[in-house]
Amino acid sequence: MKIGILAVQGAFIEHERMLQSLGCDCVEIRQKSDLCRLDGLVLPGGESTVQGRLLRELDLFEPIKEMIQNGLPVLATCAGLILLAEDISNDSDRHFQTLPVTVKRNAYGRQLGSFVTRASLGRLDSFEMVFIRAPYIEWAAPDVEILSTIDEHIVGVKYKNQIGLAFHPELSCDKRLHESFVKLCQSMGSSL
Ligand code: GLN
Image 1 (cartoon, rainbow, N blue to C red):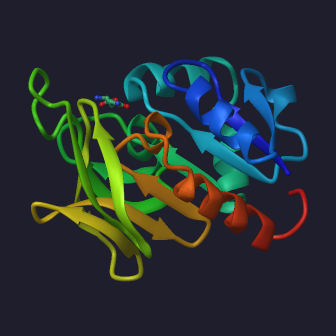
Image 2 (image 1 turned 180 degrees about the vertical axis):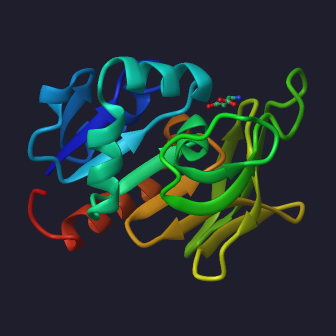
């Protein structure tokens, strides 16, 4: 199982460690040639504006968008969720737009926007959720599966091959979400 982890900026190393501990081969994606025969892709947290700019500068934007549209399983956390979102309510930038949701950036405020809580995430109960200047999802298309809601705001969704989370599962010790992602990659078939 070969998982690519976008490594141009942000919290990619923690995803890598977690996936390696589950037996995955991980490739840090920094250039087009790194995008070879992947079974899955992680878009990590960080700063979505910077990531969006670097993706375009490094000619990664179009190939990655195409791979997602062609069904490559994606786990997108925080800034990664913003990259996938079809619409961003408080920003003029748009990125991959493969996930039919509207997100609000820095939705909990910039300064006091970091907190930890616990909630269910799909079938995973009592999942620790670390929020760092996080977005939340203001609107999701009817065919998007809602995995988690905190204070009436959507913070986790699944849509076809895409999992989008407003928080950082890689910063907790709980590996259940990454295990589910690896299963999704296995179920979507061999290398794309
Ligand atoms: N605030 C960041 C953004 O809007 C996301 C923060 C994160 O990934 N932890 O891009």
